[in-house]
Image 1 (cartoon, rainbow, N blue to C red):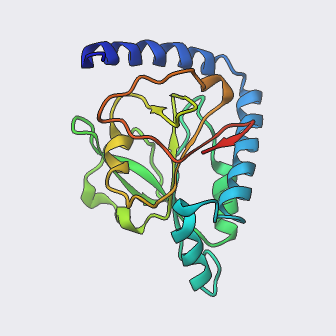
Image 2: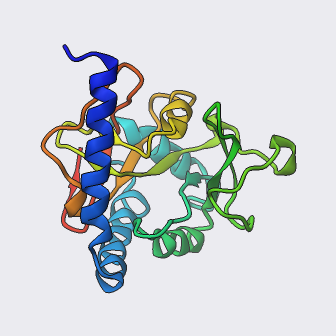
Length: 211
């Protein structure tokens, strides 16, 4: 078994390789692929949320509310340069009156991240006090969509190295669907993992949804 330093080095090398491939996509490709991903997310998780046992709570909550999905809360992110743009999915969610929240960094050094209302205006990279916003409690989130640097068929996710999502995902109830979104060029044969890395439940690209 590889030691932690070897795994860390493999992760760094893989990030560089995959980000180079992702950044080679044109803006037109990013926009087109993002639109396809958003369409897939909407069709699978908004109009048909009961995909398997991990989505059961999502279906039950929508059935219990006369307003459909109006009491549901979905966690997304603001896309940085080259990432999957979730704007179309967010707009679709708002049509269903779904509550949408996005991340903000509380403590960069400790990898502390929280979520707040999507209408709050700030960059994902900004740092704030936890008292600056109304924080959405992890147990109030019904579905979370995560940015991805690389992924594999075993549902392993490689992030940017800060550990923000790995730490946050551990705070969520186990039944909450955890979805990674990425482009096909970000798929690799094998993502190096250690004890701190968590698998996701689904990955969605412009070509497929896998779980």
